[in-house]
Structures are given as structure tokens and as C-alpha cells.
Amino acid sequence: MQMNSPKLLTWVIAVIIGLLGILIHVDVMSVPALERAVRPFWLVSAGFGVLALGNVFKGL
Image 1 (tube, rainbow, N blue to C red):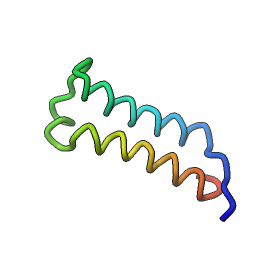
Image 2: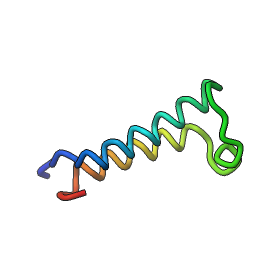
Image 3: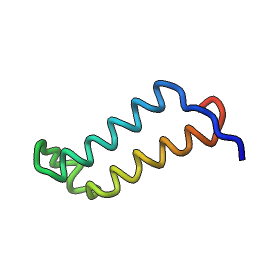
Image 4: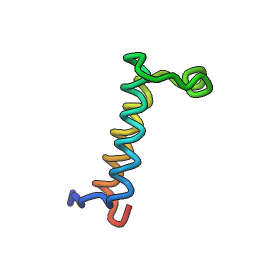
């Protein structure tokens, strides 16, 4: 399997999603609508998932 570097936009989106999960978990920030919909663990996991998809698929 050949890995590719993700585009800057993909990397930024993944970091923002992951940081949201971490900041909500440590109670630095609160997003009530987001907290009711998904747990912070899944936000961090989604951030890593987006980053992994950006590495696997070229042009993402």
C-alpha cells in the first residue's frame, strides 16, 4: 500500500475535529448541540479517521 501525504485542508479539518473532541473532554469549551450528538472520544477518532483517509487516498 502506497501512502500519500494529505492535503493541507484535509489535515486542518482533521486537527480541528480532534481538538474539538479534546477540548470538550477536558471541559475547556462547551458545544451543547455537539455534546448531545456525539461523545468527545468519537470526535477524536473521527479526526484520526479523516487523517488516515487523507493518507490512503491520493488527492484527498
